[in-house]
Each structure stands twice: as C-alpha cells, then as structure tokens.
Image (cartoon, rainbow over all chains, first blue to last red; front, top):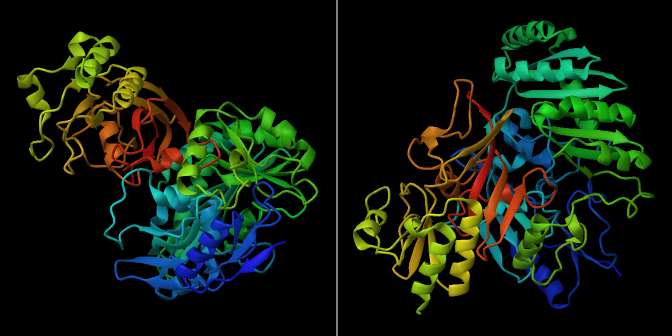
Length: 385
Length: 197
C-alpha cells in the first residue's frame, strides 16, 4: 500500500527517510510529477515523499542562489528574472501548458535544454547541494559550508542519480545575466554529413552562440543557432549577429538560412521535441563527430530528432518496437536511455541498457556507500540499482 | 620480512629495481610540495610506468596495509603531494605519454605535464591558466573540470576500472575531479576539447 509523506522542513524529510529505512520500506521522491515515468518501474509499495512544501528561492549577494528542491523551475526563474538573472538551464518543464517540474526533479534526472550549448549541462551550474541520506543525516557541501569534501564530487554524483543515493533537499547554483534580446538563424539541408560539417564550422567561427540545436525528420532538417544580447534595446545588434551566422550557414551549403527575431516559439518546439506522451523518447549520448551517423539511424527508424548539435546529445522520438533496432545500430561508444515510454511499454523495455562490467559494479558500490539500507528509489536506475 | 620491506620488494618486481627509490638523499627530493612545505620521508617513492603497474602497486599496498600518497609534479598548494612517514609515495611522472588525439578528444596518461598538452589558439584541453603540474594532478585537485569524457581509474583495492562518461548511470567520471586521491587514482584521462572564448 502506497503512503504519502509531505515534509515541511529538511529535518522532517530526513526523519521520514530514516523512518522508512528502519522499516526497510522504499522511498520515492515526488516533485512536480512530470518525469515519474522515467527509469525502470518503481516498487509498488514505496513511501511517496512529496516535496511541495520545500519550496524556497534565496538569491545571494555573490550572484549565486540557493533553491529548495521542491521549488517549481518556473517560479525560480521568475524570481531570478526580477533581478535580471537566470539559471542557465532550460529543459522541457512539463507537457502541455502546466510547467510543474521542480529543481529537484530536473537535477535528479539531469534534464537539459538548448542553453547547455553555451553554459554546459545543469551540473556545471551547481556549486553546492544539500541532501538527506537514508541514515537520517543531512549532508551539505559547497560554498555555504565550511565542510571540505574530498572524494567524489557530491553535486555531480547526485545530478542524474534518479533519487537512488538520497533525497535532494536544496541546490546552490551560480546565476547568469538574463539575456533580454535574442535572435536565431535556421538553415536546412537533407545531407547529414553537410549538417555535421556546418556544426563544426559554426562552433569554430561563432563561439558566442547561446544555443546550437539540430532538428531532423524524414531525411531533412536543419540547424538552429541563437545569439543573445543583455539589453532589450539591442534588437538590431542581435539581428546583425544572426545575419552573420546566416552567411556562415550559406557558405556551408545550408539552404534558407533565415533570421528570426521573434524566436521563443522556435526554441519551445525544440524543448517539446524532447518529450512524448505516445511514443518512446531515446536520449542518445554520442560524440559530436557522430552526428551524421545518428541522423541516419533516426531516418532508418523513422524517428524525429532534436538535440544539441555540438554536444552529442540527441533525442529521438520513435515507435516503441523500433527502440531495439536503434540501439543495435548506434555507432561505437554511443548510448541510448529511454526516457518517455508509453505505459504499455514500461517494464517491457529496459530504459538503461547498460552492460554488466566494472563501471556498473563501481556504481553499485557507490549506491551501497550512500544508501546501505537500499531504500532510496530502488530498482529504477541502471542495472536495477 | 616486515611489511614495508615486503612491499618494496614487490614494487621492485612490478616496476623494476630502478623505479623504487629508498635512499634518503633521493627520497628527500620528494618531500616538498608547491609551496616548499616539507613532509616526512616516506618508506619509498614508487614510480610505475603504466596504469596496470599502478594497479598492481596499489593492490600490494592494500594487501600490506600500507598507506600511499599519489604525486604528480608535486606542485599542489594544499598538501596533496606531501608524503606520510608510514606510507609510500606513488609518483606518476614516468607516465607522460599522450596516447591518442582523435577528433575532438585527447587521451593522456596522468603524468603528462600541463605544458605538454598540444593546445591550439582555437581550442584547449583544460580550461585553466595553470602551467605547472600534471594533467592528473590538476584533475585530482580541481573541482568542476567538466570536459572529462573518460577515465581509467585505479580504485583503492587495486582494481583498474575504465569509466566512460557517456555510459548512463552515476556520473562517476564527472564526479572524480577534486577528489584529491580519495576516490582512486586516475591513470589515463580522456578530455573533450574546450573552445577558447
């Protein structure tokens, strides 16, 4: 029987986790509930730890911020925007018009968006973390504590750990100036190798890009490049820089290469392409130089693809029966995690597909070190961790 | 044979006689760090020539119950390179080969000096102005190095683990920088090129 606990403080959350551990009951953390379908099937009798009341944003004088894990991303970004700042992380925050995703959920799943082209993945924005472990202790690392932590970097281990090491309570992040004016350029092609070459040229010649995404479907697609200015009255400057990118795209053989000043919808569509209610979504990690191969794999599987063109992260949306064929066709070193899966496919498709070996064994060792009771979201992660 | 002497004998079999240093005048050169702070004389300074030799030496230390401190060029300012009187130094400066540069990735042994990394005007391999020290030392001492795509890691029990940052799961390779020797010894490191801004 599932049971829900709604802590109002860090110590209540830690106590709830410790109480579950003494009863050997699994605990599943719930934030905005937008990614509960990710990972392998959770145990049916898990205690649900709802984070809604652990919601607070504090901006510090040094330009960093502390965000409690249950804070909706939208609320945090709205608070930062009032100060002309942003957290440089822009994943899809929920299906439809209800962006409920919380900071804790985004960190726990290492979800990402187009801004990672310039600012790196979310983990690069995190400077400290506060977590509750299953022995009831609260551990804090980062610039707001005197505690010096050797060994593995806690924020990086917890980012993308799917709640299997402990409960994320708060995150310390560095903030960036909020761009007030953006412009984007879109160039298209039907040749994967031409698109890959254009990515290499654009990253070398335009190092100031905020985002450089790829969108691909049915043997055709393109690149989307965004530039940003800090002031709202710099529309002309942004458009001018986007026009220079347009020239580079044309020199690379891309067609159209048009400039859009009103580009918010464009990037919202890119983020939306990372999620699906009806089909499987595979997050493929690969070398940037393998992008043309990944586009060919997507075509063969009749998948649509969006992704970070220069970072080697591609999201393929496809019919569930084709997931295995895509995994088999991936180039050497690439790996595919199934994020969204229709309810009927959950349990039938291994979301992780990680081979047994020393790296997986090391992960099991880390899990045992942090969660010896084995109650933190057990079974949902790689190798049934 | 007492444990220290036994470990020295095993290390000489693993690394070769000339790469296990025990004479006081030679050992003295390994006592200081980047701010010339002096530590005690260690039992020995062991200079392995490969990742598998490091793994064998660490395994031998674990079996003998003898502590080790890992050292690159000895430029740490945080005491990370200082030896212990009851332990050995594992010195990685013989491991200074750039093993591969393939596309935008470079694989190097941990003892490669930072100045020996083949940077260009357009891209570098580590986003640092630091010129002293080794690649392995820089990564072991610096939190937040974000462009690691792989590591060969010798764990404290002497097991050599290859970590691929693209493999799903805990970001173990990403969490290694700044671990200051407590998560294991990185013996080879693969870096993605970082553009110069």
